[in-house]
Length: 185
Image (tube, rainbow, N blue to C red; front, side, top):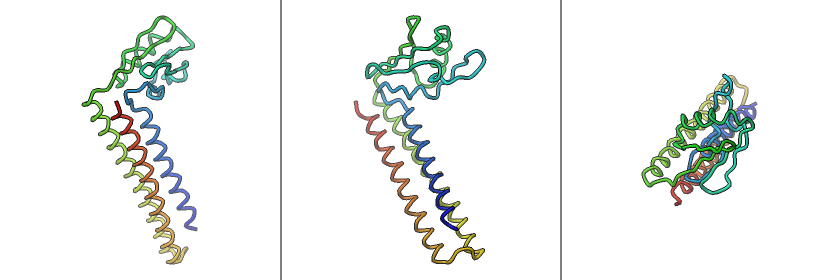
């Protein structure tokens, strides 16, 4: 009976970790990474279209991204969307390809980014703990309704705590890796 509660909670926690990891991939760390453009939406003939669905994005050099759109008429639209984003990148094009030079991060910007990483990590941990709390309440209700024994309740709570600790460790590991990447020159 309590197994279902634990499995649902585990799925929620895994989704939280995956979302955090994806979020960290889109954070610019001074290195050209095509995933920093994942959130950019282009107003393409009146429809908000993800830039990554409009062409090929690649990183031929450590500090350069190239975007070759399938429809060259959309280049000005894509440039406008990139300029409007909070990435701070200036696109240039030769009529066929958009080039984005990723500048070196200065020390101040690196520190700001590590704060963003930590804040986002803490928000993810809060979400994981919230999932644990909800599951604990469901288990207490099952015990109160005499659907599980006290031993089952104790076993479920221990399992939930181990699961929570494991996922929080995962978040800390992702955050530490991202901070190291940001701080490396």
